[in-house]
Amino acid sequence: MTIIMHLGALQAERLAFSYSPLHETVRSLRVLNRSQQHPLHLPWVLRMRQQMPPALKAEASAFSIIFAATIPDIFAGPLRLTEAFPTFEEEFRVTQDLPPAEYAELVLTQTIMRRYEGEGEYTFARVSQSQELRQHVLARTQELCPSSLAMVEELLTDPEQSHKRFLRFFSWYWETCIALERPQLEEQLLRDIQQRGQILFEQGPFEVLDSLAPQLNVSWQEENITMRYPSQRHEEMRIGEQLFLVPSAYVWPRLHIMFEEDMLVALVYSIQQFQEEGSAPVPPERLLKLLRAAGDMTRLQILQLLSQRPRSTREIAGILNLTEAGISKHLKLLQDAGFVRPERSSYYVLYQSQREPLAEITRGLDRLL
Image (cartoon, rainbow, N blue to C red; front, top):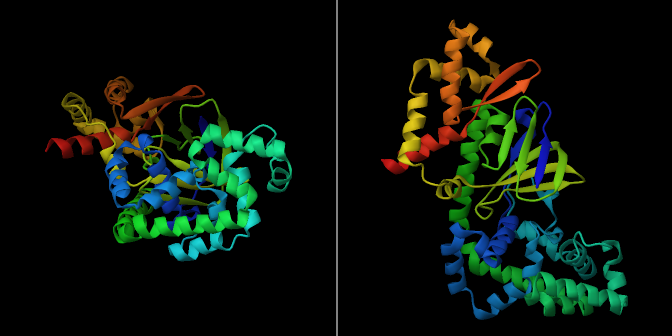
């Protein structure tokens, strides 16, 4: 999957940091139910399974189909994000106040039958009146998540009881698994927000976006972000009036996007701790190559110039009062080490700085020493 996010002339004022304890709880359930996709979280998963009563484990399995989506619409979706950090109780009240029929409709259309051919037929009103459509829904549930089959049958026959059962389960899970760890979790998230906010203040919006995840390729020149995952889908979208940056302890190794009506409203990224733990160790020979490439006064000056904006060999040579041939040799060493990347623009080749080698040096030295 390739998603291209068009940023335009992005100003720092259009970026805001947010944190949602409700959304973090939802993401933790996704990790709990799909632990094989989150290897760094296995110690946490094993600890939670030990402290969860058997009845709570059974309910988590029964409702697991709901947490296949990133943030199900029953939790109010991305538009609930604000710069003020709400409490879990304040956010959960929106889900508690949902009418049972609306709860059933959202679970059915946004979770079970999402992106299914003919999904317009599968409204709750039509499914509840058609034995044929009901069988399609149950077959789809069996295909996606067999452990949720009995729960979906109850949803279709008694949405009010199903809604009450879900609210009891979700509150129980929050109190048992998340509430006790909330102070430590919030400290991690706020520390990450402080660190990224410092990058935003000192270096600007494109630099802070570039720091969020290795899956993001930020292009200053084209004013967009490209995110790639192994998939055939291709999407393009623009950011809304404000783009929220949301740290999470439960998204690694992925990065989640939140959008509304084809407008990107939030990027949910992993906190630095998991990015560092999930990075492969830098081999000593690679670290030595990076240090040798950077360990020269002229090459450091080139990197400083390219950190400001992409430049051509001729422009760099003119600024440093050196020959183009000499600059080309330095650029070749930096490119081989991954510090710079060439891009053709009309008749010129512009060199753009890459941040990952800097992170490799920091990570490599930290682990080595």
